[in-house]
Image (cartoon, rainbow, N blue to C red; front, top):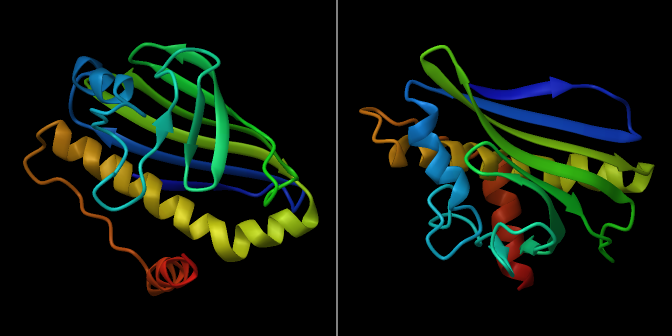
Length: 175
């Protein structure tokens, strides 16, 4: 459970989160298939702004959450949802993808989120200071929600760090 840290230097960000669930892939697949819809069972809409997709999980669908913009590149029902980031004025050098996937490992199911982007130095600094911890918190909250939706007897409840709470407070002050 948790974040896998891969250091690739300031020119790239590779951020991977995994959660192992003691349920079948058939239990987790509908959660992944609801992503970005009006009946989203994975994205933590109770704690974060929603992830929205203009045409649902159809390749080419445009998606967003807050100011982050992407396009659906690949959808394998119940297995993989891959987005390519679109150009964003506030993050002009943030090129790459983010992927939600689920796969069976024996009797367990692994949920994984991968963010893999190329960045310039300025964007890397913005990532490290203002985006990374918020990203980590929303992904862990999504995995917590998956545990609730899978009806685990004692679902995990991630705790936000003081820094995440501070960044969220700053965002509310700006809007």
